[in-house]
Every structure is written in C-alpha cells, then in structure tokens.
Image 1 (cartoon, helix red, strand yellow):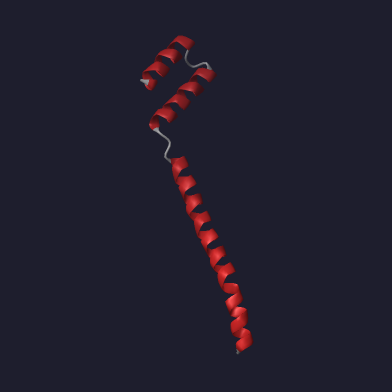
Image 2 (cartoon, rainbow, N blue to C red):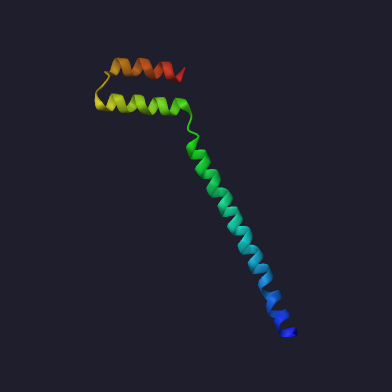
Amino acid sequence: MPYWNHMNAGWGPPALLLSVLLAVTLVVLVAVLLRGSRARPEDKALRILDERFARGEIDQEEYERRRAALLE
C-alpha cells in the first residue's frame, strides 16, 4: 500500500491546479458572454442609424440630427 499512497499524493497538487484553472476559465467565459449580450440601447440605436445612413435611407443632415439627439 505505501506505493499506491505515494502515487496518489503526487496527483493532488496538479489535479487541484487544473480544477482551479478550469473553474476560472468557465467563470471568465460566462462573464464575457453575458457582457456581450448586455449592449446598451444607445449603442444599438447608433448602429441602426449608421446602417440606415450607409444604405442611403436617410441623408447626411437627418443622420447628423438624429445622431446628435441620441448622444445627448
């Protein structure tokens, strides 16, 4: 039995380190995914406004007026 106990003790610290690294990686991944899904409404509105201007749906004057209103 002494041989088995010696082998078992050798895996303790590496296994613990691997478990901690895995847990930290999962927490960071979840945090990044949640942060990405919480886009501010102003950002979404500006993105839509930029897309409408790029497609030519609104002219520059209207674009600038609406952008200024959104940024106030």
